[in-house]
Length: 263
Image (cartoon, rainbow, N blue to C red):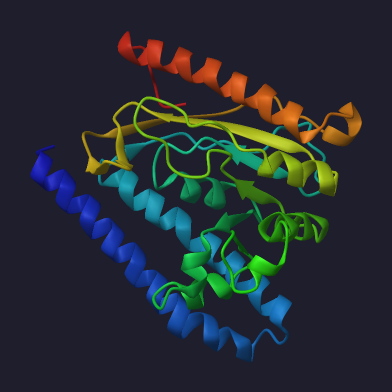
C-alpha cells in the first residue's frame, strides 16, 4: 500500500473514532439517562455500549489493511467471580482498544486531563473508567489515583493499567511502576499480564502515523494471585518487569530474523 494512502486511512480512521466519541459523549450517553436511572446504572450502560462499538473500529482498521492481530481471552483457569488487574506493556495508542474490546466489563485508568477535556470529558465521565492523578482535590490526598483503583476493584470491576505509565518509544520498554501491582495487592485480586508487540513501529511517541502494516503479537503471560502467594507489590513489579524485558528481547530477535507472525 502506498504510504500516502496508508497515512490517509490512519488519519480518517481516527477522525471517525473521535467524531463517534463526540456523538456518544454529547448526544447518545446523555439520552441514556431516560432509560437507566441512577448514576451507577447509567455509567455501567454507557461503558458496555462503548465496548460494543470499539470492535467495529478495530475491524475497520483490519479490513483497511492497517493492522493484523489475533484475538485472545482470559486464562481458562482464572476465577471468573473476582475482579482482576490486567497489566500490559504499551507500544501503541490503540493497545487500549484491543483489550477493552476483548475483555468483558474491563475498565481502565485514563489521564485526568481527559476528564477535564471539553471534547472527551463528557464521554469519560459517563463511563466506569477511573481517572488518573491530577483531578481537583487530589492534592489533599496522599495516593488519590491508587485509592480510586483499589475502590474500583473492590466494587468488582476489572481494571486495565499500563505499568509503564505511557507509550514506550519504539523497540524498548519503559521501567515498570508499582501502582498496578499495589492496587492488586490491596484489593486482593489477581494480576493478569498481557504482552503486546508490533513489527512496524507506529502510532506512538515520535511516530504518530504508521511505517507499514502493523502486525501485533498479543499473548498471555502467567498470571498470579498476590493473596495466594503472599507476595508484595514491589516483588510483583520486579518479577514482571524482568519477565516482560525477557519476552520483549525474544520478540525483537524473532522480528529481526523475520519469524514474527500475528499472535
